[in-house]
Structures are given as C-alpha cells and as structure tokens.
Image (cartoon, rainbow, N blue to C red):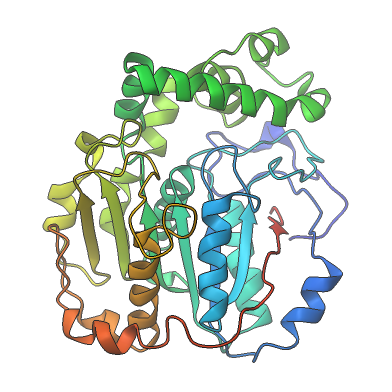
Length: 359
C-alpha cells in the first residue's frame, strides 16, 4: 500500500523486469494547504491528473498552464511527480522508468477511493504521455479514467533514441536531460549501492539519456539491455489495448518524439471500445507549440482543445467520438457545447503536488 515501513520486498523473490510493482516508498506528500483547498470543491467534481515529461514535475510551466485552465473549469487538479523528481525524496533504491506504471496506478486508486463519485481524467506530456498510454493499455477495460490526453508521446523509444543520438537538437537535448537526471539522482545514489549490476562510475560518466538508462534504469528495473528496455517500454505496443477515449497530439517536426514513431496504422485500424483521436500538426517541435490566445508566454493552443475533449468525455460525448487519424473528430458537432464551460468559474489556486505512493 502507500503506507508501510519502507522496503519490505525481497528482491530475490521478485522477478524482473519490474512494471507493475516495486518496493514500497512508504510515503505520501500532501500539503496542508491543499487539503484545506480541496474541501471547498464538491466531492463529485472531476479530477485531472497531470504527468510531466522526463526529469520534470509539478514545477513545469506547461503543466501549470494546463492546471490553471482545468481549475477554472472546476476540476480538482493533481500533479503527479515521478519518484525522485520535483524535490521528492527516495526512500528505496528505485527511480522511475518509461514502462513502470505501478505509481500511476497507486495514485489513480487513491484518488478514486477518496472521491468515488468523481470522474477521473489524465494528461501527459512526452515521457509522461508514454507512461500514461502504457498504463491505459495495461488497465484495458478496468481503467478508472474517463478520458485522457497524450502530447508529444515518444511511442517508439528505440526510434526516438536514434534521433537523440544523430540529430543536432536531439544531441543537445539528450545531454541536457542526462545532466538533469544525474542531478536528480545524486542525492539518492547511496540507496543504490550494492544492487546487482549497479556501477556508480557509469552514472557519474553518463553524458546522454541512453547512458543514464544503461547505468540506472535498465539495471534497477531488470532489463538485459537498454534496447530491450526501450522496446518493452514503447507505448506503441499498448495503445491498441486502450479502452477509454484518448486524444493524441503530435508535431510532425518533433525532433525527439519523431513522426515515424507514431503508430498510425494501429490507431486508424482500432475497432475496439475506447476511441483514439490523433491530431498531428505540421510544426510545433517538442512541446513547442506557440499559437493560441495566450501564446507565446501562456497556455499553447492544444490546451484548449484538450479541455474541450475532457468536457466532451465528461458529458458522455466521448462514447460517440470516432477513431480518426487525420485530426478530425466525429464529435465535432458537440465541440461548441463541450467548450462552453472551458473558461467558467473563478481562478483557483491549484498549484499543488502529490508524490506517488508506491506499492
């Protein structure tokens, strides 16, 4: 559970690779101010979980922009911080990965238990989008979410890794992210000493995201190689099993979540319940959309469409949205009604954070 006394799991009896369960962190962080604020929101108010990209967290500006928009619509907002990010402490030798969904599942279960009458939604960016899609695919018809949005999802991690290694921007980004990940990891490295196949020297010398995943991620999650980790963690393998309405927003010029990685054939051919709507823009880079009424310093244009999508799902319109791969929604006739409440209500202070309670 989310409580407990820490790491009670016998590593020798737990078979890797780890995707659904990992030693218990035994800690949940909720601000007192948050608890007081939430008591002012109706128990049946919709809840939105926000999942940032690699090395990100509740401090990211794009997350805060979306959070404020959702709060104005009356949503209860929860920023999901992966283990070790956003100054959250690690109490066990476990970081986060692109395929580990146990923490997301624990948060969703916790929120559903607290507000059983509320509809739950989630939005993820970049790596957060990949984790969210993997979670939805694993849950299938058992998913407790009523709808989700994924932006700049790196669907095929091996393809995206190749882009990071070969492209100029990808190389710069990879080195910057590796530096950030080493900084996040440094305060907790003592916890990992003694783990099988762990070498602290490899962590210290990691210059790229791939280097860090070789030194930490694939080792602690039990994968034989980085390529095996990337392949197993790619959400292109799980999107076909998603059973809730999912809006996917990608940019064709994204140098990281490259356009060739998008599983268009799976999305277009999906006939099972849980429509997937794919919207692709000609430009936008990696989370670099600048158009919109609040741009370039405020919320980018996909945020408004994402909120309309959530409102449509909340009202039940999502059940009739067709599977589209060209950015057109069969529920377009309901967009005006779905977007009517996008800016309603007063501004709410919802800049809050929840550390994932591990299981």
